Image (tube, rainbow, N blue to C red; front, side, top):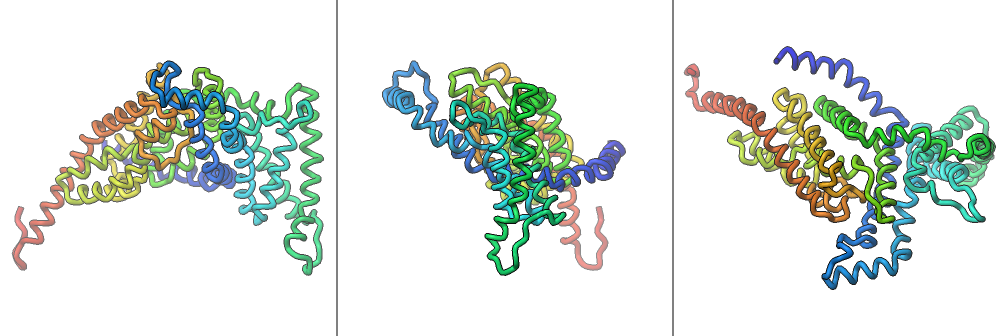
Length: 442
């Protein structure tokens, strides 16, 4: 067992860690991640509006308050949807600007100017005129992959032109803001002269504009991202990286966010249309069934540590339980420790994978309501699970089941580790109590 563990650690340190570190620091991955983080407040608030628009009551309810709320929502649906439409409904605009602004910093470009350049470029290809009005069909999840590609393209074009001095330079006496406005004249023209003809060409050849064509290409990937194998693979990668001390969640979420947002947008559209919610694996599923208390679902472990006989573990449990309620578990990961601790490798990796399987099957069988809202990742597990599913109660039960499963799986490994620490504590106490000059006897 020891040889197998050492071999596994060797593979992680020599193969996986360098590759994960390179991916985690790759400028496009970090820029995409930062773009989604920048858009997150707008998406969370927009999603929260769904609770008021679609109250969690049955149409057959006889409760007066619930019936009044339902009637009010139905009568004023168009007005109530406005905040949602201008937050979650246009999330690709926020994401496009956020990605470009983040990527601009890698090229020493002005983030605001680059973000505006990306915004213009995205609108150029994803906002066609229909009956004299701008179509917003690709401002939500359907245009998310276009937003990623266009933001990167616009920023790289700007960086290339500036790096090669293909720009309009004004004398130093000209104010910075004015000089920057002239500086991006050529990038604006280049983007218009490349993107607009390309969009027209693709439409003439395929009958689809760029966002439609991109979605048709990535549709198989989007469908595959909502499968149990994709779920288990992403969880396993996250856990193994974290065990090696690498922030695996940042890498995995950076890759999965576009798929999650596309699927969440479809779920919200289905709810608005009164249809069945189609997708399972979205951000709320990841946060509230797999990361209960943080990566590895360590909140149940924190409660177990509080009752440990080992002073060290009991202290760490008391320190980590409150942050763990809000899904912050660094005190547990580095204090117990779990990171690079061979006794905790199996439960740390397997707990979220087993919970993922249970939860996925439960949602697939329609035993548990599916996610339709964005929630802050710091929301306590059962509350966040219910909130994400429009305040349904079944996700609370599922979250509690996942917590019990985690506690059961962690317990035997904790007992084995506790036994080691108690033996060490006993040895340390006997050494400290022995009189000076006398040998310590077993």
